[in-house]
Length: 207
Image (cartoon, rainbow, N blue to C red; front, side):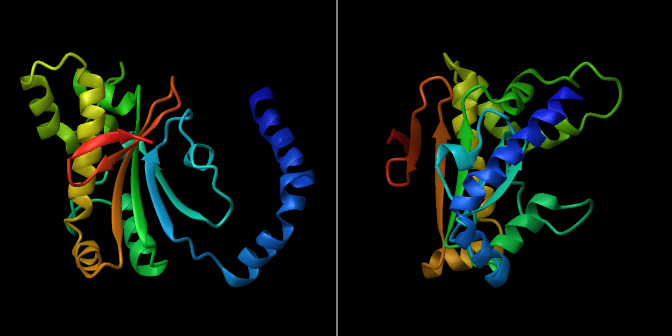
């Protein structure tokens, strides 16, 4: 299929250009392994690639991407916990010193939370079950008569994910001891602006 061929062509450009320029770094990553200081939890939206937004280099960031950049609360029962496993590995295995929850404008997962539904498919919806993580925040936003519930819930979802990160005992302990810092950030696709959550004022400030 032509779309996949485009990926292969992109790889060839990478191999002949960026890889050559960063060969020493790749050699070090291969021999020494990864030790990124930062973990970024971002949406799987194709328009918001954290490596592009933050202009990072290979090995600099441990990236976790999922629908609506959500973090579930800490719990050990039932089901598979892919997100929680990645968080555990990042914090306990790689010992990252920062975790960034990166939300964004026009998020489809947040839209699904606001509108509900099963994307037009019959049967169980994994999306609906997943975005239920922000159901209390959704109800709060809708009850507020917001002029822009989409954006308001996108921002609230970042706060929810940060609170849920703090429900993990090993994160709470490391944050309290100063070994780990949590950050909330929001990217505007149309204007390219990055907003960072100020912990003291609980507001998102443009950078």
